[in-house]
Image 1 (cartoon, rainbow, N blue to C red):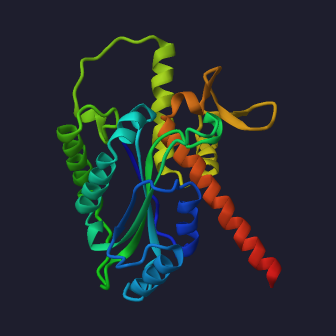
Image 2 (image 1 turned 45 degrees about the vertical axis):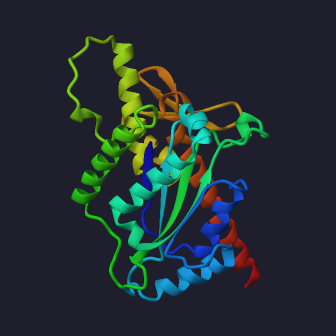
Length: 274
């Protein structure tokens, strides 16, 4: 399980809700907290807007979070959607987001689409208010609390669903393992995997990820013949993003890039309308 919490933003509620629903498949899990009877996009936009009037005047509008599962767990999650609801509920409870206004949907693989054109794994998208329901109190967590909550979520999942591949493993270095002698090639692969993961977790889109990679002193981006950024050079070898970055992380970055482009297109349309 990979959890990405983006920085709070002033993005419009309606835009994010519509983005969630673009890849949502009818009948799949949705989750509502403190939204009353609102279930449709316009209704949800209205209640989120009304709740935002209680927040601090300097606060941003919303928080966008993603809980992503490995592709290997897709069949298990399809067979038991209760796992999705349970882990999402525990995540919200641990973070204190259950006291906020929340709307979330599942994006999952579509069997009717080609693999290359479809979502490759299950993941929740959460729209969360920056303030608690009808309150000025912020839903922000300190870094110390955040790390403790990650550990608690990992332990909860391990205890209830040990058969899942999607363990949190927020800090794998906590588990001490004996040192293994590795070749230079193996060391390079481990380094690339670590740096890709670290930079992906800090990035807000795929283009932001590429920009951060480019700034790294030892890495150089490379592109395909069609001009698509595919990976980077490191010590004379190519390392593809898709190979050395976990599938769920890579796909989340791609989705965030799509969301970024949609926002830019909307801004351009507004500019032309003026």
